[in-house]
Length: 259
Image 1 (tube, rainbow, N blue to C red):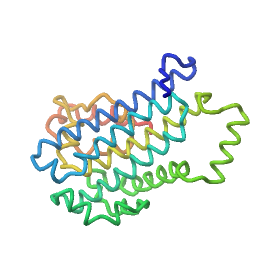
Image 2 (image 1 turned 180 degrees about the vertical axis):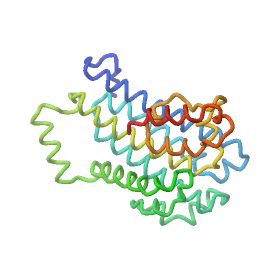
Image 3 (image 1 turned 135 degrees about the horizontal axis):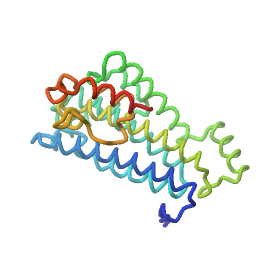
Image 4 (image 1 turned 90 degrees about the vertical axis):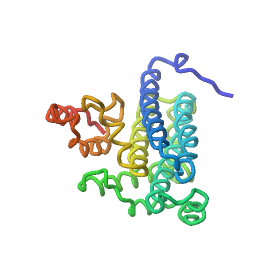
């Protein structure tokens, strides 16, 4: 079994992989908060898919760092596809029948859960996003899904990419920093989309509990840089905790967005 540690890698790979760790740990923090905050509802385990799928999200996201360190970059992209697809379907089912027990949900939405298509994302109620950001978010999900799907099924583009990489001496375990940076960009976008979808699958207070602290600030995490997470954050500017520093919070939020 491969067990490469980041400390064992060349200096030029260490920095982008450390960034991978920051992205993934930020996602785990958000995922864990959503899971724990929603679980205060006594019916959570009985009727919310996340109460069980949280384990799959954990496994897939944690695996990303190992896959990156081992040079298994295409496998990591497949995991992002799974996380995004699962997030879309979970959100869709929960929005359609929130209180329905999980077993009945699986029976009722059998076709949607089996499908490899994500067209149901156009039926989602993205009420936490400002209206101007809703269609751009749906389009972003489509782009990420399309990009990562190209690593699930063999395509001419994938073959040409692999041939070019091998011709340059880039085989598994011999990736360039630029390839890790490219993976980080896809991971960040995919995990940000997952968080936005998970926020929309749980009660509205959950996102507010995470994003608005006692002094109005949100958590100091990587996803402050996401355009769509920032857009959700802006929807909580009405909260009392923010009023004394509202203009400062708005300006700071805008400065932090970079993807």
